[in-house]
Length: 581
Image 1: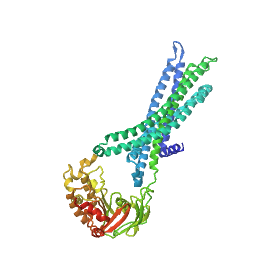
Image 2: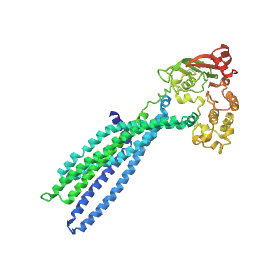
Image 3: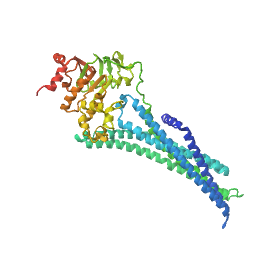
Image 4: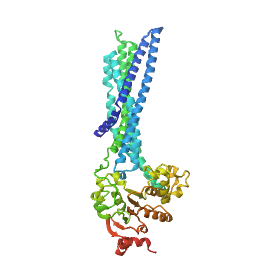
């Protein structure tokens, strides 16, 4: 219950940014309620205009009809304005929440993003905020109006008859107690439903991205079976949430019907009693007020049910927004005019605390050296690069560039010193030119084409419909993995940084193109400290230093020839690739 109250408080914090609009909406709600409450008085007076059968005061009735029409028109205008304001407030609040969610995602450490399905994060930012939007809109539209109507009708009923008003006021709150009892059970079901929906979205997102693999291994039936299990779990929670929430309206309507019957009975006795204090018109007016008084309880109970769902979704969004961001930069030093000396000092790291990966990694790289990192899959090669770029922070030890700890350097400044080409391509839905430039300024078309020619990308780019202005849409318009990798290589060649990281940079490129690019890479690496991660050992023979890794440790270091002479693990790796069968 405390978590739900905390979530509601956070929602109100967002509403607080739009206090003026919220107060204006409440004012319009009050005006609308008061105008609507005048109508029963007019209708009662119209009935009292019928003095006797066949005797009607038409002059007075006509006046009352004109007044009633004016009130109805004014009420419609006020309610329209209130709806406009409510929609604006809701849209702005959900926009702010989504902006905060996206900003937090951009500041979260990669460890969080790696450990959470992307589909679940998408569900929180999109689906959960949509549900919150619907709940907020109902809250503004019906909760405000309902509360003002309840207060207004009590005032008007007290002005007519205190005794009957007490009957209404004392019995009606029973519907709220019933709604609150049901809502306690509804909230937990809606929360589980929202979580299950996030898991289902993550599953669908994963399967859509791997359809080729599923079909290649004939796993369609298994994929359908796994989806059915996820879907059944969601359906179970949704059914329970709907069942509990559907109880609210019938219960409140039953209580309100009892109230209406009580008012009818007591009012009829008052009309038939002696003294004629309570006229038929007044009785009709009171019955109308009783209906208007009880109706908001039905609306509010329905709103409460929707708010349970909205708050359950809001909680998931706020959990994302409140995730701890990356540790802030110390900003004690800035790298400039760097030489490129790199040192790892007793670096230890693990993705999971109970499963150590890198253990006491130490080595030194001189400025301008080409460093190759080799070893079997899963030995920690890419992890080493991730630590150097501060995508992850080491558990212990230190990494220095030109004698300065990378933990004392702002991440932005550190990453500007590296050019990266990975086996995973980074391509966005934009033009070829924008994908190559990627945020760089003051770059001419001639420089872009020169870089593309160096990488070998120019030949396929000029064959595209609009050349460098071709916009890559869904599935990147049929570009092969090799062509996408060439675009990534072009980025680095456009504005060469002081240091290079090549992680299987030519893994998707044909052998002929690889040979051409290797020559350009060799020129590019001249005078630049370069880290090369490769499984094909033929690509790293010219490296100045080769680090051989196994099980998270560096077990051998040296040049290609010296490592072969050691007759150790590296030689076995090399010969396993080139020995004749």
